[in-house]
Length: 333
Ligand SMILES: NC(=O)c1ccc[n+]([C@@H]2O[C@H](COP(=O)([O-])OP(=O)(O)OC[C@H]3O[C@@H](n4cnc5c(N)ncnc54)[C@H](O)[C@@H]3O)[C@@H](O)[C@H]2O)c1
Ligand SMILES: O=C(O)CC[C@H](O)C(=O)O
Image (cartoon, rainbow, N blue to C red):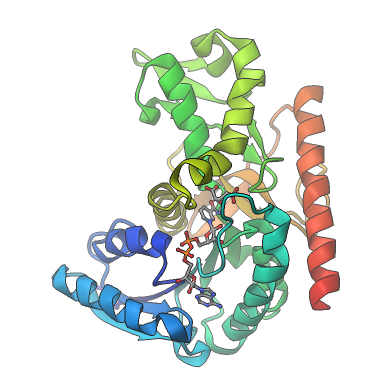
């Protein structure tokens, strides 16, 4: 059997982690033959809760789980990592603005970037989940200059899955028959869920999404706003931020990094924008359509962009530029 991979989950005593850890530990992400050492970081006051999570992981009696290391110390958490899933941070509650999170959370990602720089393997794959995810990811990457920027990505797979599911429900089919939706930009309400390149498999044949759905007004209107507002709608209903669906999306994202995307399929993730061919400003973490091979992502180039899409891609880029500039001036990075 292979050597264990060392995987860090931060915010390990929180609600996303509670859904996530079991899936990772049973092999859904790194493979059914891949042993795992799970490192669990949370803040000192949460250590008693984290002990309970560790007990439950032990009680699952999972064959791939070689060791569980709970800690509140950066030098323990970030050492020799193969993968880091950075969840730990404050979620938005009902009534809070997303911008309220920026100041509260971005400092966490500066210090965790510095810890990655100091202790992790240079090959570590870092997935940032904590909001504002794109800007936190950019700050973490900037704070770890010796780790390639390409090793950092942020989660927009939840938005991608939401978009697939909305189209599937509209067509009365399963979400597995919807492929190549795109989430452009920020994991926020300015994100642009784009179905111009999406295909829906209807009775064994790939059909363009607009022909399968047969309702252009919905695809250019309520579909977009539903996906953009879905996180807020879950918070309003649950009084808590999405967790089960976020954990599922984290697994999809990291599994695709580890094992690659299927031929002919692309997925959405927030990646470093420098050098992109879509005219998105440089030095952002912006969600693009990507394919992944050998643990390396590549932005899907050459997709036609019409004026409708261009305006929405630019609006979400403008929000990211503003978030980055606020974070940089706040942190002085
Ligand atoms: N990108 C996405 O698609 C997406 C989706 C859902 C939630 N989120 C974000 O994920 C984050 C976590 O959500 P949750 O529902 O699990 O929140 P939660 O409050 O249930 O858990 C967060 C955990 O992080 C811990 N934490 C806080 N500061 C920390 C630090 N410096 N180091 C380590 N741990 C720390 C807390 O103690 C807590 O246990 C939030 O920012 C939320 O907005 C992102
Ligand atoms: O705070 C929000 O609006 C979104 C929370 C979370 O990122 C989600 O998408 O469910």
